Image (cartoon, rainbow, N blue to C red):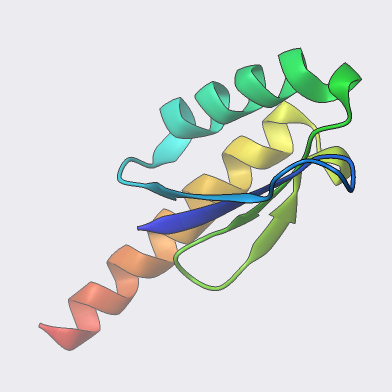
Length: 83
């Protein structure tokens, strides 16, 4: 499960959302949601399962998909070594 941190302007609430899905589909869903709210000043930082932090304003949608895929690969590799 990967937490997502959502920040808006100082007067708005910060939310943490747990993700129970991953991969390219999750990356696209998050990107589309954030992109539609970006004009409102929403800032999103994603903490992936491998500890990688991704700030959406610093990446493209393609880079976000790659980050999700890499985190899944590292997690799968770790599972192979542990079991």
